[in-house]
Length: 376
Image (cartoon, rainbow, N blue to C red; front, side):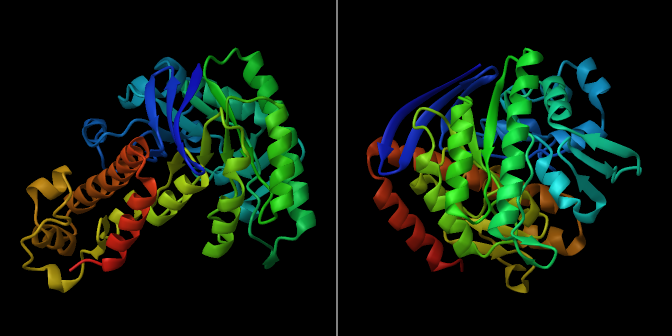
């Protein structure tokens, strides 16, 4: 089940509400990434406390471990990982792309050796739908080929991007057929591909819209291309998707990327950046970024961000977090992850409030000014 209400607009920016089998999601929304059935180092209760509404799981990795048999035993991912709100699962296409030379793509699907134990595996659109049915994710992503920015040492050509995009379209139709055959009660999203070529993006978009799917994603960005190239595609694509369906920008990005994405018409975002950067002591704040390993924080009694209400900022100083980092304590990335995820989730809450109030342009201007100030 999926219902989407468009509540407010400001230019291309949208304020919406998404109703799914496991709950309601207010949009625009940031979705923390839980690749292996866990958002790294963060308890589900902490995610709820910070206001996370929906999280991700990864079909590819959960297929390998723990396996479909275990997930079927638990009736899906929700009970298995102790999360009762909505879950979106990606199809495995990006992970297959990241295997590089270890995989062989054909019309039927992708053959590759398991990165876990070397077993020979075959992932097809049908298999991806079957795995995601076992996961019982509220939003299911089609299996696609993620078109690279570079192919074998050269920039991907228009012809190469077209071949990849058209394969993803054929796989989308197979996904839809298998999704319907399995009587999946959740929602299937298509993924717009086409590389860095606007006309291919439009061809992909139009063909997917003809399938009348419940929602659509923009894939194949943040795959090594320069930032201006990503911004060009993001500015071009979202507002061309149906206004009455949710729009999801996959794997993006920085706080600035999220705000620009909202302005371009995106409703949903995910990215590993908050937790990955946290594990490297790189924290996001309203006034720029903090690198906690810097010795200047050794005696700093302030919280990471004095405007932040997360558990980390309410209870701990920069000096303490710096100390944990220097000692290699596992609590350091845990507290840093809580802060970064809270920052992203709260940023989207503030965006929604600005859209509700009709002050989104002013919010964007203040956001950019604050971030440009840098931390002290």
